[in-house]
Length: 343
Image (spheres, rainbow, N blue to C red):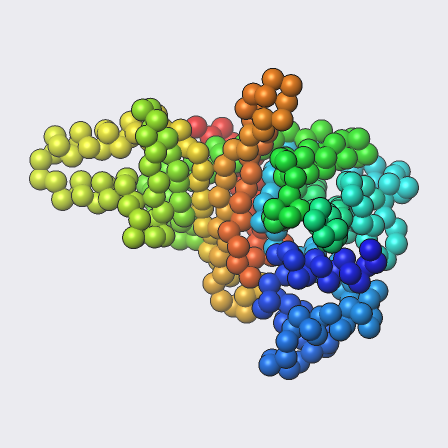
């Protein structure tokens, strides 16, 4: 399958680029300025008439685009630049990305304190044999000693058993084998729990942060779910706290507060989401936001068929304005807790 077909299939059959973002992309590169035109017909026409030019422009977009998931690891970045120089044969040196069924020959983009290593996988639909481009980016934060592996969601047509786990592990193996990077998982759950309690206790001190959601299992295997941003769903603990404020009997108030403390301390947090709001450079001076939820990912693909913990999956809630800048902001924000003793 040629590059034209791969890129057309990718745009039409995946969440590679939203319709609104595609319209902006065509305008930005002066391919189409007509707001009433069919953007999908326009992109097909452009790809077929000037394939290599627009493909390289799309490749640049892939470094900045929104990715739905990421994992996060601590790493010793000393010597990483020198190590990259020694594996020229393992790096794509051509203008067009190397698309492969495996994790190999990535394209690299360097920034002042970061390195983006982009792998371009070719995923094939078993029923129609259509191939799509599936970019995965490993960002090395040299100054804070973290590695983030970002990837997108795929439809069931291209999904294989434990797809995200396998992708994540293959990228980890490539970084270890080729750049001598030993990745140790960063415990974002501790960071999110710490933020959760701090925001709940002193919301005025966190004007840019808010609790989006939390899912808990209590000691009796009951499940409580509330979203601070959605009042139509039962925000169980928040409502209790508000009710307690009006209690006249101090003893009753203490009992309910003690119950809330015990519930939170004994409950197992299954997932948790935090929203950050601030003025991002791409928001034209407007307040933008990014919401990230985290939850544990497990596999059963092992010799004993037992459930095994794999890694913490960070889920970026989709929004057209979410991009590299916002994702990296969250990572740098939580990196402030890298060496703290969080309880």
